[in-house]
Length: 146
Image (cartoon, rainbow, N blue to C red; front, side, top):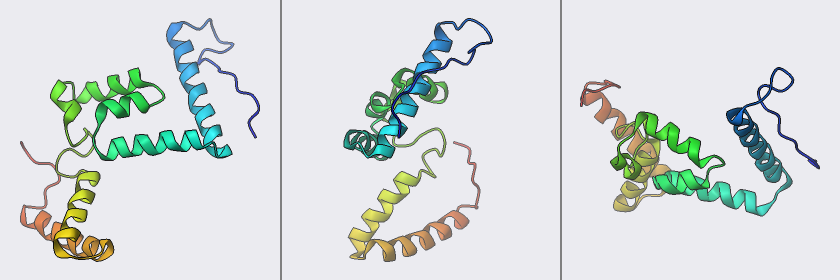
């Protein structure tokens, strides 16, 4: 079990840490503490992770930033590739873009299942087959000009 944690800076014993080194050490500490809380089964830790996962699936960017262990850095990373304010309400991320977002596709499959009166597994198989045909018919190109 975890009884005690201490933070260590990247410069530990190599030089005097500056403000950024201390910040990075504290974030690493927070990650380790959260991992320990999850391992120990603390319900609050799991609730936080579940809330973050739900915010991620629903593209609630501000909630994702605020639920993260380092909200400031999360915003910085997001804004490096999607800096416009409109990107904070976008239903895709910079990794997959709007056409290949796994969460968007999952929601489309769920909607399809409801419309077709199918269970999720049958809808998934049928939906994936249809998506493959759609992808091939559109030229089978992963990268498209917009």
